[in-house]
Image 1: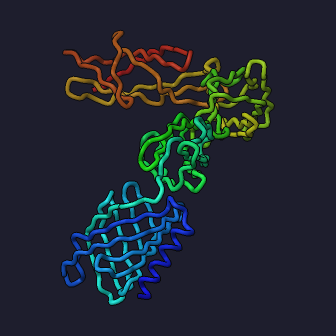
Image 2: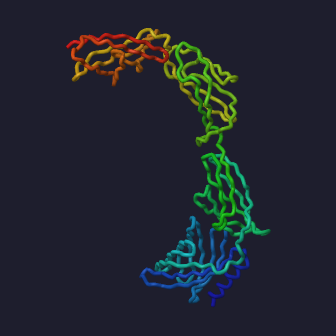
Image 3: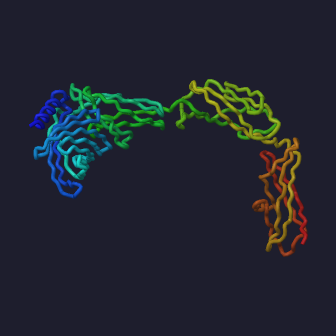
Length: 419
């Protein structure tokens, strides 16, 4: 009698103090259940329950159909379509368990105080829902703009006619990808969903679902974050010694830290200097260019720059390549050695193909051609072959065409052959 009275008091308390939409009656049927000794058991039970909504907690009181009263305290979580509910069951055997539900079917595991385990497959059928979870409209922004890498909280209000829709399961997806569970609306039909950080700029569509039914689309535009790096080119790739240059900046591109290109930008200033070289560099804002004084020595120079883009300070290094001026070529050294015969060919090797400049610097020539009898010869790793006719000649005459940027010179070489 005490148990029945306790059951009635709990039921009345839930109905009296609970909100109507959170109360439900459920019928469970374990049609395939085994205990740890593999004894088959059929179990029918019916419960009156209270769902706390956004707080993942449920209270249920009821009994099996053999009138054994029991109470259940449980928590729950949604993983897409899978519903998982760990619980504590208060009955004559006091037990703990976990239920995994897909639609109305569930798998159940239960362990009682006597350490007896139960495994079962069952069917959960909602019988009565006090109040109706209806939704007709969701109030929210239709368009949103956020920066890349930022999270966004969106407040939704679910209504049905003039009433707030309470206890509605809300889901969302981005660009029709994975559907994510956001939670339940409160007594005012409100819920906040947090859109995770999106790092790629562009336009996205956020679909809102109420109890798996699509009810709203929110258009989201992700803008690039603040400027993080800048890239640019000069109008000249190679510079030569002893010349003053006016370098124009072109192909400017600005990116955020997620490599999104920023199309609209405003550059306030540029500063340039060459690392390790204290020469002054003048920058002209009129034609977006800088003036470089003549370099005496060739090499790769690091050009340090700093700029202000959209109120963001950015710096970096741009390399420039300085080559010896072709006008300063003093002498070209190139030799050809005879290596011997190979079947019906005479084999030769090009050695020391270098250019000597007036500042005493030397540079290896990588760009040259060799002709014999006005025919171009194929060269591989500075070696080449010439066919031998019936009469093996005493010497070979070669024309060597040397090229260095806009400089072009032809050298004639006569190679004596001794057998």
